[in-house]
Image (tube, rainbow, N blue to C red; front, side, top):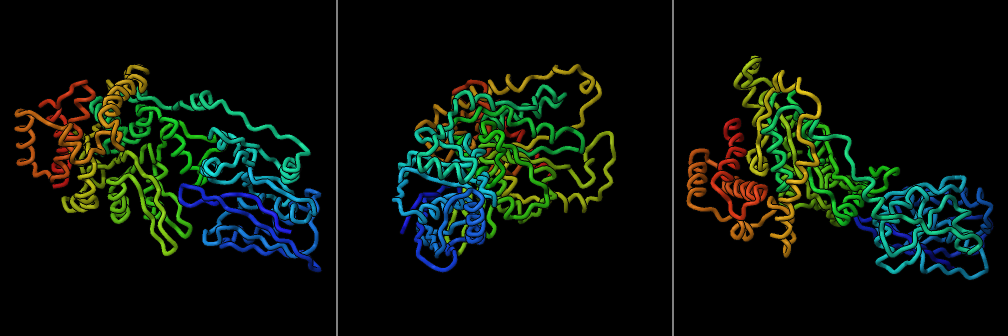
Length: 511
């Protein structure tokens, strides 16, 4: 007898439906054969399944069970096929016909029959809905994540016996109900706020500009000036994520296994801060079974690289393509996978190895050669892709001793940022772009016109500071954001001057 159930396999950030077929034929002892390009975790599921069926007091006759996971040319990875395989094997041992074509099933089994959570449930729910499956059986811990998707009934499953009795209509498991709006709003909170940062008003201004236009930013200053503290608070001034952005970001974290099951959904901008010893694959993505890297985990959020020159130069250079295109393509012999990677890059570094070059109060201990070698670890092409360069000096005692709460709150800054973003949303309503930083040449020609005064300022800066053509475009994009923050339809001369100020550090420090 042949039975079948539907499940799903992950490929990149998407899921693809998999048909689980089981053919039972007589033999002296039970044997399970799994075909359909399974990996080691799927092949080992036979032992987990047999143990779970026995522990759940479900009937499994002796004989050979051939399990086919179709399509056969799609690699099947992970333990999420345990539950559908077990249910299909039990059904194949019965003479009673079994049909469950409206259902998709995923879940890992313990030896005692307990159902454990799996990765990528949000993508699987989207695929099940697309395929017209009305019901989705998922581990109980994954139910809130899957229930975010409307139009499909999500049934939380605790153990194998419960799943079988539900499919046999011996018990009722009500669909998991989720108040999407209340759930979405309840998680929109941050533990940090910009009012906790004392001083550094010009740096806060630069961060506001970066958040308003989606620009990349580099902070340069000695140790202890608050670079990391400022960076961690950038998500608090960025616009709230839309539901589509939240679903797309949650899919990536779910597939990577970094999703907190207590929250089950990301509604705040991600903030990723990898250590400088990270590998190319860890930053960009890849591996034997290609998965998303830090640039994809920071999608719609912030990627913070502290101590930027300490990263391997080859590791930094792999970011150039995702910074331009907003996605990462991993190519292997078996095929190519594309992961979204539209993030805001925020980097921090010391001006020299000891950190005190240019400090008025502390003496630098580095030789000119050491300073030059330190700065050359960052290439010119990478610097050209960073729109804003800002110095972060030491904070004096008067500012440090100011009363708590004297600074501007993140909510206030976010209000100005969102006003600028609304202007950009209207500007790019018929385009795939969302921010000024991602404007293409045609859009720049239409939206970055400057008058004679501003043209003179920019021409003088290009000649005196030897900016590249890419830096020229970055200046215009930043100036467009500054005009949006001021509510001006046109780029003013003061906007060009401020944008040039944010570009001058790369020539001052790295020439």
